[in-house]
Every structure is written in structure tokens, then in C-alpha cells.
Image 1 (cartoon, one colour):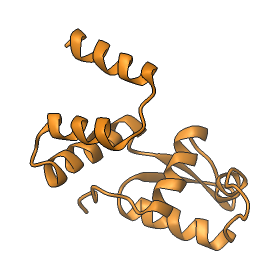
Image 2: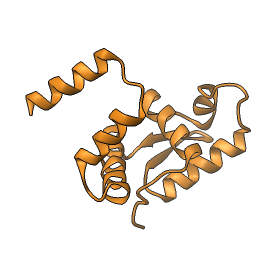
Image 3: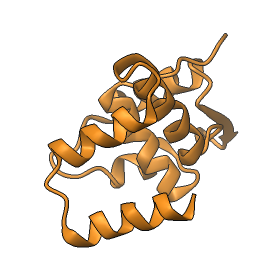
Length: 121
């Protein structure tokens, strides 16, 4: 099965927890959710979907399964942002940056950081 490029908001929430804890059971992932916590079966369902999408793997540990990411956060972020650039900004990195500069309320420090990054390149 080919890995789907984008994750739903709920899938991404589960992946962010797995990226933070590196590996865990359904209970360990559930423990890291903010209140109100989803049901155990909901988290299990999302982990199974992520496994089908080839974002996570699992190994049996007693009666439970230990889930761990197959895709690292940086890899997902790079692929997602490339997709955003291609699909929303006609492939233009300048248009993407321009959007954030105009639409976000950037602090002076953030603007300085952007300028430094551009000069570095």
C-alpha cells in the first residue's frame, strides 16, 4: 500500500504523541492526550489506520502492541510543506514565504530570523 501524503487532524495528533514518546502502547498514547481524552478504542482505531497508511509499525508485547513511527516528524513536515507549496502556491517558495510574512503577525525577532536565513542561503 502506498503511503498517503496527508494525515487528518486526529491522525496527526496521534503521530505527534508517538513522535514525542518514540514508541508506546495504546494506553501510553492515550495518557498523553489532553483532556477531554478520547476513548481507548478511538485511539486504537487511529493507530490501526496509521499502520494501514504505513506511518506506524507495531510489535506484540504480551497482550498489547507497542506502536512506533515509521515516518519521522521532519520527513512528514518536509513532504507536507512541499505539497502545500505545489498545490497552493504554484510551486513558488517565495509565494509561500510571502503569504506568511503578510498573513502572520510576525514579531521583530521572527523577521530578523527570516532575514538571517535568507542571507545565509
